[in-house]
Length: 164
Image (cartoon, rainbow, N blue to C red):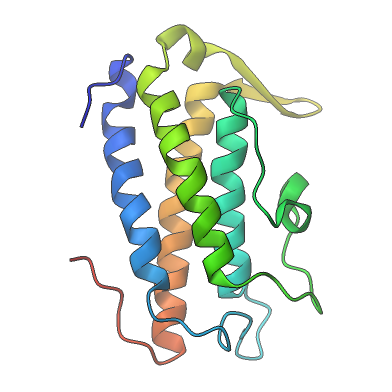
């Protein structure tokens, strides 16, 4: 791994790289027929979890002035939750967008300075925090969502996610 400009991000980028790979492993082999299956619960289905994760990387990239949106931006922008009676895109569309934003965002993370990471991010009225806090939250949430997809794999009778 290339050393980041900010030493604060060394471990974060290591996790980013791991989760970049785990994302694809978690989705491996899941059929298009199962991505909307909620097993008669209110839980977020695989299609929403996947799109939400991709949206999150695009949102973080925008904090570094990287323009762009995923193909399904309208379904996820402004932190939209899962919508009933909506057909989300297939996993291949999300994977394609993931492959587009991932290297751009990694370069931004590697190049980020301590000064940039100290800048305030305005998320909502009366809600702001340093960019570094947003970066670490995104990394945490990525692991959480990948874990949820891994659980769905087992609930839908797929083999466990492979880490190798």
